[in-house]
Image: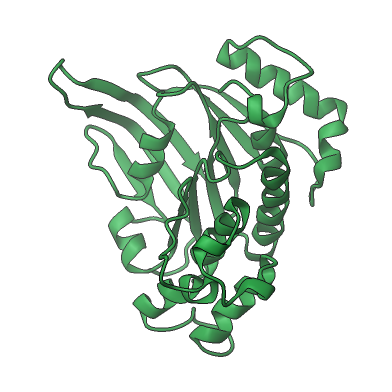
Length: 274
């Protein structure tokens, strides 16, 4: 897939229904989304509003109709075939019989080599990402020997090892404790600054969304559609100190209001209603 100036992801009028004995569930009803090249956008919304469904549609994992999904100027299938699409979910999905480095190397083994323009081979590319996420001491360890946060670092490195142009992330830090979550947010920001892939990030944490994003999209309750778009004008590169800025609190307040959630200054990132 050639590099273009096309948006990373465009969703228009997307509708998706999960069929069932009781008549099915309408998950998305006319969802719209536009993600620019190199942009970091987060989606928040009530549980069951269709956030993950929208992300899976962008990855080409579910069929949707009516509506259209364009990925990097083409289809999701074309992006997958060109190895320019990365996906990270809440479950790291590591292969238990492969070491940390071998798990990270897996996408390159499946595609036949390291990304064009990189130095060295598959092992060198995987080793560089393992080091980049701070796991060089555990390169020969197996998933069962790692903490939850470390396993998610491996999953992140694996998704980035082939240098995707679009990275889709479905609540990747949702199962982690608050400290691990903050560490991985900072790691993700650092990696994003380096590679500048376009990122669509689904989260239940309002504060996490504000810390990471250029824009935060707010979805309605099911059937899901966008009810607000909040541009985040905080300087980059960002650190946890950004959360102390008055504007940060104002962004959180606006998103809570769009969600219909009670505003409170004492909520922590793991307890945000979304």
